[in-house]
Amino acid sequence: MGNGNTPGLAGVIAGKTAICAVGEEASSLRYRGYDALELAEHASFEETAHLLLIGELPSRAELSRFNARLAAGRTLPPELRGLLEAMPAESHPMDVLRSGCSFLGQLEPETDFTQELDSAIRLVAALPSMLLYWHRYVADGARIETATNDDSVAGQFLNLLHGKAPTEAHRKTLDASLTLYAEHELNASTFTARVIASTMSDIHSAVTGAIGALRGPLHGGANEAAMALIERFSSPGEAAEEVRRMLGRKERIMGFGHRVYRTSDPRNAPNKRMAERLAAESGDTRLFDVAEAIERAMWEEKRLFANADFYSACIYRYLGIPTKLFTPIFVCTRVTGWCAHVFEQRADNKLIRPSAEYVGPAPRPYLPLEARG
Image (tube, rainbow, N blue to C red):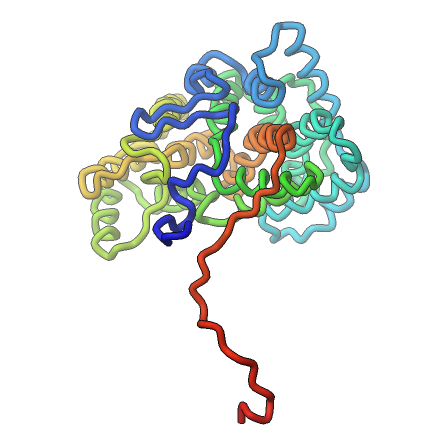
């Protein structure tokens, strides 16, 4: 950063990773060598989580054991349930997850780094339980049981949210979305997790910090903002006209462009297909039609492409998920990537401590108080 030409560390290589490869010009995304889009289409989120955390796709027996560990980790300690009930109803759900993760680290501390995989699997299992226990408690006063008979994180999430087992089509759609969001190289939250891990802190601190980074609207929340925009319009024509006016007023429209990808976000195409399919199944295509009109207007006016967040907003709404839970879903899947990066950082650790270019006042002498008037 010595020349001051890399604001936000854009383009700076901050380390090596074997976890995820993001192709800028080719617009590709690979997890440990596997195309993320292929995983979303053919593999389960649990297979992807195993790949990220353990390094390889599981055999049938390995997947069965992994799923059993997840199932065992979905029950919340009574102390944690008490904390969730004590949180204000108006709390931001990201704050609920941040506090819940930190508190779980006190109840079940990682006292030795050999426990890291157990702690990570527990977090993958417990974070959806925390989110939906709190949500259902403040929404309708229910103290739900967070252990379900569903083997999948997606199935459990929808089951706890709606109080009934989801359709297979809905479960598979959320499952694919979780896979597409599971990992994305050194984004702000992942880098935060690695910085904390580099101090040799515990995994709960690293994940809590990552949640805090994702809490910021410049990293998380784009799909919430996209849905707020899409819901404003009653027709595609109205949407296209207003978006053009918004651009004329130089208003920012979330869900378009990307800090890394140059030509397209590879996750957008499968997200758009899933959103279109859900719209058709619902019998109400207005949200999808409006979204498509906005996408077209953004491309025609600014040559900006929709990123992963734009159509995921439609997906989650068609699945009956409240907008305030959109970004927390990101936490429930990206925790796999965060923990994988914590493991990798610890395996060959060096404290992450960059330098800064000083731009303050030149050296000056101290003046006694009486000489300063």
